[in-house]
Length: 198
Ligand SMILES: [Zn+2]
Image (cartoon, rainbow, N blue to C red; front, side, top):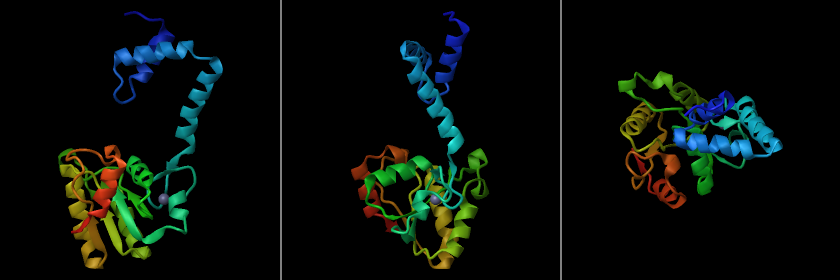
């Protein structure tokens, strides 16, 4: 189908979002045309602001608008525990659960030799630096229950073991191959509670 260029551009933009095919993108584009101009401007500004004003915490790697992030700065939190996750979205999932009061470390990926991703390509070096500086007693490895996530947890566990820090892995019960971010709060809470030492 031939659209005027501004519309086809808008459709192409929506198609860059995950899970949006041409049909949905078309529907969203025409929906935007029907929106009030103010609403569209606010929407566009929210997109740009989110991108411009957010960066990654220099300590934990979580997404933030202040550095260090609010979680790292929070003195009420238990600094003896660090929960290691793959993605900022996992931190948000953990925080929604409200059962965890420790700190986080976001790897931004997992070790995957097949894709040429080694420990140096994700936030493993910064984790090791952090473990030297801080009074960490337990490292909770909450990487995804995928081959890469498991391999990453095992790798970090072996690396950290000589330091005397306890490494635990969150329990199964999370859907295998699934992402942490999609687990519901009860499942996630149980997975955390049932973590076992590696
Ligand atoms: Zn942080």
